[in-house]
Length: 149
Image 1: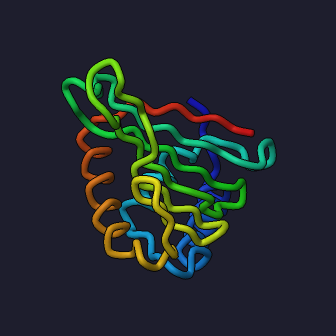
Image 2 (image 1 turned 90 degrees about the vertical axis):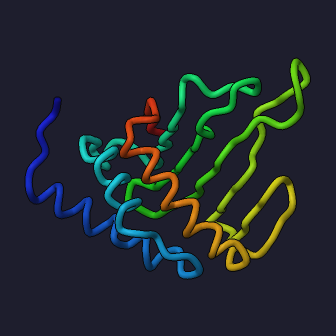
Image 3 (image 1 turned 90 degrees about the horizontal axis):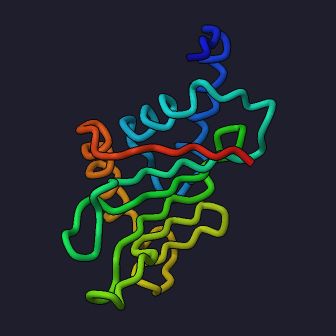
């Protein structure tokens, strides 16, 4: 595991704290900021423009349910680009994994089950989603894959 300096940790913390003000419309809770910091602490921001974090419950399926897959994207400077929560739609062999919730911070758009809203209309749901996601994360539900672009 790569060790990072205290200065680099401070740099990352400062950049992730920027997320809270960057979104303007929605507030990130401290627990989510902590998750993002923890999962990206070993990355060197000099070598990528964007990071995508995929959180997957390996047992999640259309038949048995489980915890929804989540994708979160950030820039190398810590700006939140989007958070997408996926769910199976349909039954049996016809079920497909689709976006259930999507918070796009670049264009200030909130989508729920394919319908578009101003991002501010999803503020209360976003708060609840964050609390649930962080609880699932801390219980060890997810396998995490990190991709840098």
